[in-house]
Each structure stands twice: as C-alpha cells, then as structure tokens.
Image 1 (cartoon, rainbow, N blue to C red):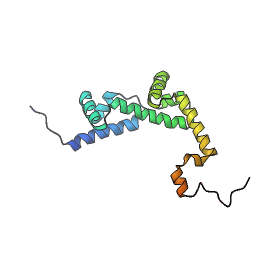
Image 2: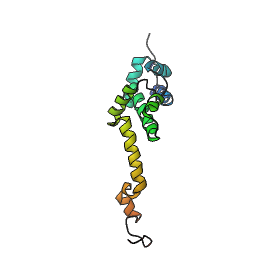
Image 3: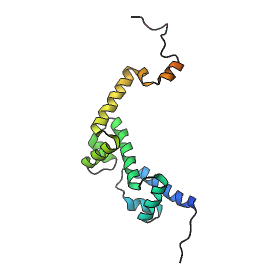
Length: 149
C-alpha cells in the first residue's frame, strides 16, 4: 500500500493552521503532541515540515512567540513573575534564562531599559527621529516662534 501524495498547498495549510494554533494558545500548557495533532501529522513529520517552511522547529517558534508576548507585557510594567506565568512558563528561572538568551537582557533589565528609553523619548523626542526625515520636515532649523535665551 502506498501513501497518497498530497498537494503542497494542502500540507502548507495544515502547517499554517498549527502555527496559528500556537499563536493563539501560546500561554496555555501545550506541547508538541498537541500542536502536531492540530495539524494531523505525526510529531516527527510535523517537525520536519514545520522546520522546512519556517526555518525553525515548532518549539523554537513557540518560545519566540512567548518571549515577544513577554516583552509586550514588560513594556506595560507588569511584574516579571506575572509576565512569566501569563505567557505560559512554569518556572521563573527558565523564563528568565530563555528571555536573556533571546534579548541579551534579563526581564528586569529589559523593563528598566524600556522605561528609560520612553522617558528619553518624552524629554527629547527629536533625538529619536532620523536626521534625514527631520531635515526634510525642517524640524532641525530654528523657528521664528522659538524663545530666544
């Protein structure tokens, strides 16, 4: 008995469905078996197809989605422990280690750096606009309406 050859579009559709499942359930306690079941593939075949399409394993993709969600929560001044559990990690130490591996900063350092950058943007916004754009809009030239010291 031979296995049927499915069109690539059908296989891609199933892999994308699994990716979308990860995107919407990243904070749940999901594992490779849950994700592969969503795509109706065996675990090993699913990993092979997913990596061929997205150039990383499903686990690597899921971790990157969780880290991106964690960055957003930290930017909103959530605590590190709340963020850790909100994005689907069970251990604060594993979350902190993985976060540091992805961002080169601990979650606390990331949160403080983001807050400091936002403060700088509020204080001197022109410093964060590309010079070519500011010149084009004449924002770098002195205005007649500016106060003279």
